[in-house]
Length: 99
Image 1 (cartoon, rainbow, N blue to C red):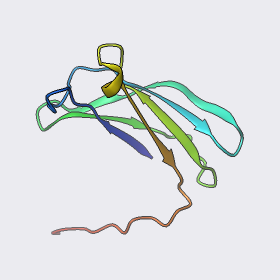
Image 2 (tube, one colour):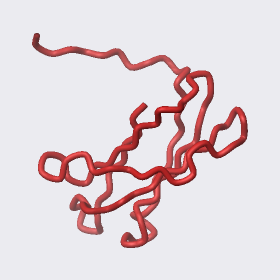
Image 3 (tube, rainbow, N blue to C red):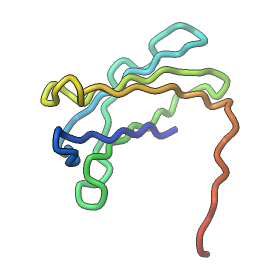
Image 4 (tube, helix red, strand yellow):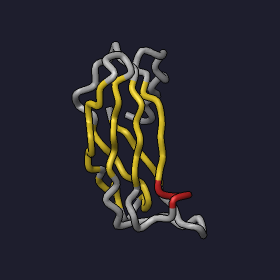
């Protein structure tokens, strides 16, 4: 499962060149399963400001909390993001365009 995050600055411009980390906490087992996973920049040219992390050890029957730290170069307001990963929720249908 890919975890993504977008970082911008006070002028709402995409922030590039970061090395964000992600901490993932398993709500079912009450354990940290990823302590400081390194996120990579998606595409500096095509989609600046976007970063991703491939969470390959996900257990689809568990729910998780993810906390993303954009790094000390960002002010506190822009530095942290968080979310819940709940794979058991109904999936969004995929739509394929073209052939």
